[in-house]
Image (tube, rainbow, N blue to C red; front, top):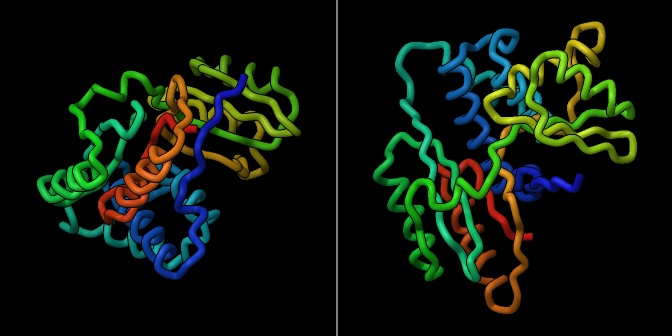
Length: 241
């Protein structure tokens, strides 16, 4: 069905500096997930999926454990979610997801990225209505009907499903992440009820994509790189091929 999706840029990290930034972003995300839903992965599916993803991205165990220890204690940082939407060159669109302990600072930093590249920071809703907020699972399987049956049997609203080279990718609304994950683990899990998901994420997918040409490519890449360099930025989603 052709619903292409982007892998986390962080998983491509090759340098020590880039890896350190990856660890920091995961630590912050783990802390927030554990603080809001509890530190026990068995009862917090968001945290459970995040830990598995962190391990696949080679985040050290001590980084994961430290984030969970901080979340289980009193006090700690007070991170909140901040989301910004904007327009890059040639009508390209971006969604910038952040975790911040200082929204004013984060807004200023994100705004400067758009200003310095002569692009435009929009208002909430300008861009996001042209994206789908999806839970995405990719697992090793070849029986598309069995996967679909398991999901529909659990009343999951399946948005899309792809079957390619012995791997099935499922797209569901982000609000049904836990329901879909439970259904897949129940139907295809091992003796411990676990599935080795190749992809287990929630992210924005553009409903349509565009191609950039000439100088617009360099401007767009500079904007995305500047945003990803900000400590508070967790993910950048866009509609550029």
